[in-house]
Picture (cartoon, rainbow, N blue to C red):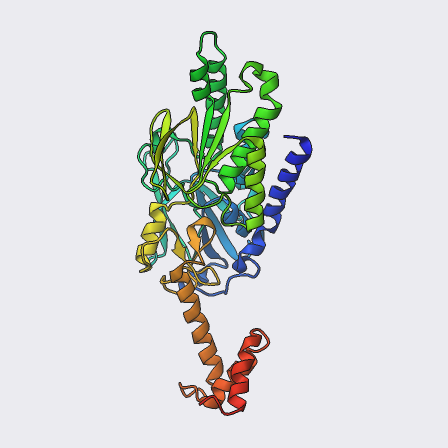
Length: 426
């Protein structure tokens, strides 16, 4: 990959860190004060942030440390610039350049905020406490502790989703953490060196140097692109005898790769991969992953095939953590991948309102449950605005008036108000 391409990706990823806060409504203004009467003894409310990813860092960069006593809990003590992880797998980017210590990102002066390298294992919304556990290699005699909070922000992210496919965790590689990228890099280097040894049959070399990417989303596509750049620019110089024995296959369950993006982007990526010799298999589902091959089934024809690989990178979407599942259960939410939140990112169902928020990959503002919740929120707000005389009912005139106030935002409503003027609305 040329320096210009790398610089463009790096600048884009860095820009994301700068604008990330804008994606989260509640960080643009301070939380309302006086949530907990018991906290009035302290000049600052206790804010506990779970996680150290993009959402958590966006909050930390914008929070006012004079208003909140901030505590951050995360099993890793650094922020990771995840968009550039694929570059680590082929040596384009060094892993150390993608991480930033969380302690350096804490708001305020030294001592104003705290960081705890531990995993949050349970939340008690009634007592407003978080039970945490140190899961690192070195632990104290009692690795568990409890943190009280006035406000809680859940930003723990989401693990890879295997969809229960047999063999994935045993034989495939993920690309979510910096250790994953380093592990893939080590595996690729070992495969190239082994294939370069004297006496290795060509058929075996081709199997070793077959890379299978499961998932045609942003991570899978970016990894395939980075790997292709490595094969085109570095392999001919480092491993000239292997340059024509390498293959990349991308398996996607949908009709197109990058199917959540604009169709033009998806089409361009597919055409570019075709020119680069990257094989794309769409409408395929991986049903099993063995040590050196994956079983793939075509969703339309039901035809099955086995695809050999030297390394398999699994990037099929997001799963859920036990912590998120337990919080959703406590909030009375249906079993889903992420926590349902309202437009202010408050976790639905947890009382009192405004005590707990969720953001990032562990939060869902677009699920059916969340959409239904948003509709109820809007309906309740509109009813209160329409009920001018506060008698608990909306008569015809009040209904027409509220419709007229909405015309600027929703011009199509004008047909209803016109009907009311003509007497068509009864």
